[in-house]
Length: 375
Image (cartoon, rainbow, N blue to C red; front, side, top):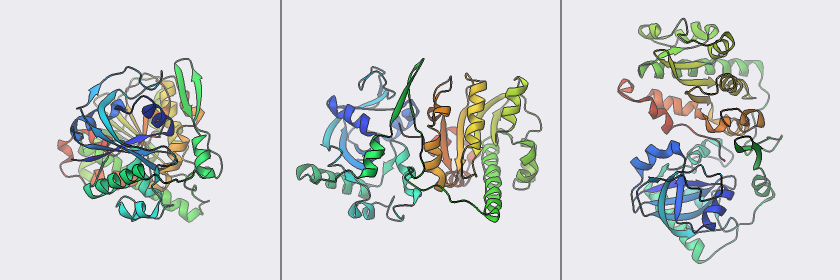
């Protein structure tokens, strides 16, 4: 038996429990994980985002199947489904906060972090992450006890603000969720104003990870593009034998405006004349520059088939994933940016760079490390 994470927002949890809690769903991007990781008899541990609470246990009763029939209203982006048996179902005020001391200390995901440290949140950005057996067993017993003898964990003022953060606007093709961050409204405080030496260190770190992303792509068999202004610095960090894999000219047939936009993206992985993945390396405290370049590319070429990523330090995860839901990024012709562009932490790039035999692997391994904004 394995224990897997099943993420819900307060809205999707209400909808899921409201129709019987017998079929849970995941996004299309989870298809491979659903088939590879989950077996009948496994348990889904349900976690409510925005409130950061454990809210249920579900037993898997089928293999994955695909069904796009709406179960939770007209907007149901969860077609990868499992039949499940509800073991524990808790309402938001009975759901157990992850920051409860006995929970925080029992989980290896959290017990090495201070509650204000953003590193622990990465695990809770993607459903179907698998928990250690000991952690899974602990949470199942905890939640069963909570259901048999309910306690109450009153919602704080901050919890209530988070419940009201969800804002949806109607477009020609349907509704999209947007977020307008306000000062002091982030779960983790933004970076303080940096001194000039700190800015230089950040810039150097950015170049290091730009080179590391380029090197991972080269090892996987891609040709790589970096902007001309960055090329000399990147080449100093890449083995000389791989310099020939860094392109001097983009082999793309686009109009001048689009080509100029593409040329300024921090790293591109290319196969032949096609772009496979684009990476924005974000080292500024505002985290806008990389997002804007990616959004400009989609605005100019809405039908472009390319994987998109923002790469940044773990400490900026929450800010990136909040900013990506601003209206300006959510009203693109192709759909909201938060559905098309993921976050990759510097730590995840380090992990990818250390994998042996990258030349024998598909670049789909990147998707095991990416995180998307919660909706």
